[in-house]
Length: 146
Image 1 (cartoon, helix red, strand yellow):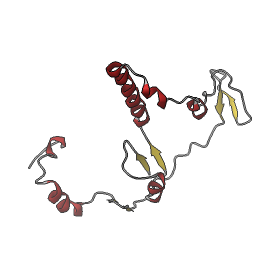
Image 2 (image 1 turned 120 degrees about the vertical axis):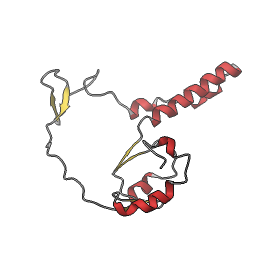
Image 3 (image 1 turned 90 degrees about the horizontal axis):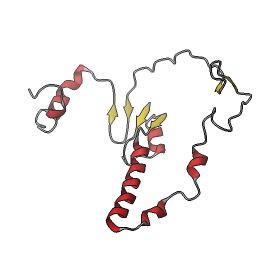
Image 4 (image 1 turned 30 degrees about the horizontal axis):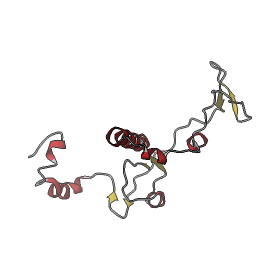
């Protein structure tokens, strides 16, 4: 299961793994964190004329070690586990088996905060009870209220 995490939900990587998650995606969250820091520092300069937020910078440029150059950019070398792309000559990985994975069977995932299962007709009554009097929900629905 893939989990798209866009906020501090209180779950750790270990918690998600225990729920059956095998891939965690963060979407644009890392960019939003960076923009938040950018805006905070820019506001400080504009409002106070100070640069204290610059103390939070990565003075050791660890990002360059965490995110090294992609193959094909300056300094890229061929390895035994790569071959040149026929069109560009840039190193690419070796050909892999492209047989699609077997679709997962129906499972029910039980978590600390909820349960995830395929929607079925027997869910209708409890779903209706949960939303029928919730006036704030209907603007987000495609149709209704009934």
